[in-house]
Each structure stands twice: as structure tokens, then as C-alpha cells.
Length: 543
Image (tube, rainbow, N blue to C red; front, top):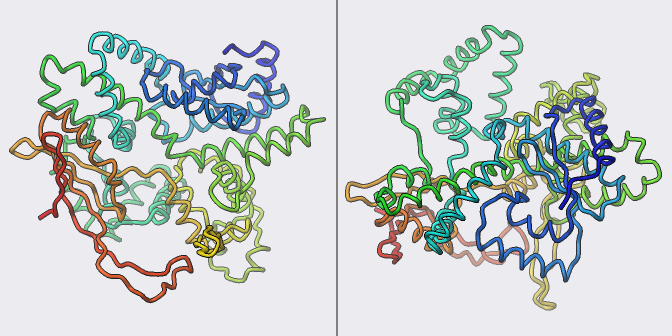
């Protein structure tokens, strides 16, 4: 691994100037390295951060990926990490013209990292320096404590997807110790908990608020609150009750709760474990926004590598090669999901809609397909709109707000079903639906959505984990191992409450849902209690 040549660096600085002229904003400094395929294989398990702490699972992943590479050789073009300064890696097999195209893609990622609000807890955070400090700390502890360090890492990583990511973001939005405002309560609690707004409904409320602020910067917030208080007369009483009950309290995630309250970790000989858990927790928090913005982030980068490189005179003589590589990256698969392709096409689609004024109420009232296709107010606000989306959206909002029937029809998208051909004993795929609702649901189900779990303690000292019901069960194969680790770190019994579907009836009548379903089962959700005590798991119906 080595830094790129000064010649390549000069070319890439020119790319930055063109990107800024197009409206992208990012810090000046960046580091670029040329790496081999072997380097890529070794850095992959560490999320491309060489200074990340060592863990035996990473070695297993390297062996697995090395074996896969020997069977199916492939060359990743690049990768970029959200550090200060941003670091990007380029394969040593890439020709110069390809690295220019790729650098435009990288610039799109850097712009996204440094402007999307879901990354705001990383904006002033030198993670690469923090990572090397953590790596040295764990290496030192491993020399003293041996394999117990790896046990603690494994136990903590079993639940590190449950870190309080949104609570962390809220802390950056509001200074510590300040009481939650009615506006924050309305968006963060009232609409979600009491009104149970859909994502599209929630986004509309945000748009209404932004519209009032734009029309009247000084009194827009007050006017908005007056409107919602007249619409929801119970809002004010709910808000006062919330302030009275929750002032000064903050919700802790599992790892945070263990660090603060575990009797086992408070023992002098075990305090080092809390330090290791904190490393796992902060690392997980850092990577949370990347998992939650995959479609947006890759779509934004793909949009800009195409827009900027097609205008770059260095494409001359490489048009065909560019077209081949670009198609490999951004082609829409007939089955499955390509985040690069879907995200890029959504940005082009939103830009076109905003340019033509198709976000206006007048357009939404049109039902004639010809009139909708010819609708054009020539507002030319498309570029401004996609920058707004880049700044304020995550994947869940992006998908649920903007995948509509026009988009699905435009790109001939559909949901695929499969059925078993018993004669040939093969799976047969077929078009199950071309409806936007079904396609949107299919994409949404593939997004990252960890379970919501709250923590409490009984008078007897049992740690209680309460899984919020969201129409999805926990994966039972992971419950045993996860609770065993939590029991060890807590130093006592652990109880988990969760909802699971129980079949109550089998209908012999063929289902109308699709030809792959021969029978339809009906389910009822029931609450179960899992108890881990003495490394033994029990399960019973909750009272």
C-alpha cells in the first residue's frame, strides 16, 4: 500500500475543482492510496480501516475471502472511509482514466459523509486516530488478560447493533441539560408514538414546517406550532406530561446500561471489561449511518461520477470502456437490489420531477397518464431539490417517500415471486407484482432495521430487555448466544420479552396471494419471556 503519485494527485485536485463548481462541498484535505487485491482482502474485514482493533473473526474472514478470490478473481475498483481527512483506496490494476472516474465517485461519497445530517456525530471526530488508540489499548489488555478480551469483544458485538444511534444524534441536535422543546417533542415523540405517522406522513410534516420557515423565517416556527396545536388539541397536555416525567432522563442502550450499572463490571478486577465494551459501542455508533444510507450514499456517488466524468475531456478515447464499467456498476437487475442503480435513478427521477414542478399539489391531482407525462412548469429546481434530499434523508425515508408508480413504470420495475416446479425440482421465477406499493415494500424489507430494545432492572436484580413489537420476531437462533453474553457482562440473570407468531389455523384452500403458496397459515402474535440463568435458557409465555 502506497500513496498515489504526485501526477495522479494533481489530476484528482483538478477533479475536486470541477466537483465544487457543480455544487458539491467538502473539506480540502484527502488521502489516496494505491493498494493490491491482497491489501483489499486484508482491509475488508476491518471496514477498510487499517488501525481498527484486531479480532479473531477478521482473520477468519480474510481466509474465507482469499479462498473465494482464488476461485472467482475480481478487482474492487475503490473504497472510501469517512475519516478526517477522508481516505480512499484505489486498485493498482486501475488505469489512470479509470481512477479519474472513480475519484468523482469518491468525491460524491465524501460530500455525502460531510453534509448528510445522519453523519453529524462524525463531522468533528477523528475516528482513525481514535481507532489506533483503541487498537493499542486492546492489544495491551490482551497481553495481560489473554483470551478473556476476545470473549468480552464477542459478547459485546452480539448486541452492538442495538446501540442508541438516534439518541446519540439527538444529543448533537440539542445541548445536554436543555429541556426538550415542543417542536422536538412533536416530531420525535408525538407523531411517532401517539399518532403513529407513516414515514411519508412524517416527511410531509417536515415539509410543512420547512415551508413555513421559508415563508416567515422569524415567526415560521411559532405559526407551525399554532397550526399543529389547533389540529391536535391533546398535544400540549401530552407535552407537559412528557416533560414532567422525563426531564433529565435519557434512554440508554444495552451496552451503555451495562457500562453504567452492571454490578459485575463495577468490581475492581472487571473494570477493564467496561473499557473494551465502550470501544465496541463507539465503533458501532460510528458506522451506523453508513448502514442506514447505503442506497442514498451509493446513488449520490454514482450520480456524480456519471455527471462529472461525462463532461470531463479525459473521457475521450475511453467512452466504450467507461460505458461497460458504468453499466456493471449501475445496471438495474431484474431480480434483487442494486443500491448503486436504484439510488442513482431515484436522484435523476427527483431532479426531473422538481425541474418540471411535479411535486406541486396540482400535479398530484392529475390522473390522466398523458397529462401527467406532458406536465412541465419549467421550475428548474431539480438540482437544489436533490441536494436537499442528500442532506436530510436516510434510506428508509428515501425509499418510502419517492418510489411511486411513475418511477416503477418508468424503469419497468417489478416484484419477483418464485414457485417450485416439482417435476423438474427447480425454482421458477415469475412477475408477482408491478405495483409501486409492493416494490417499495420489497425494497424496505431489505433495509437495515435493528430491533428496538429497552433496558430495566427488577428489584431482584434481573436485567430485563423489552423488545418493542414491530410485526417482526427476533431471530431465535441468535437469542441463546446473545443472552448468554449479556448474562456474563451483567453478572446475573437476564430476561427478554419478545413477540412471536404462533400458527393457529391451516386453510386447505389455495391462497390468492400467489401461485407459490399452496396453503395459507394464520398466525397470532403472543408475548414470550426468555430467561437466561446459569448459562441455561428457558422460554415461556409471558403473563
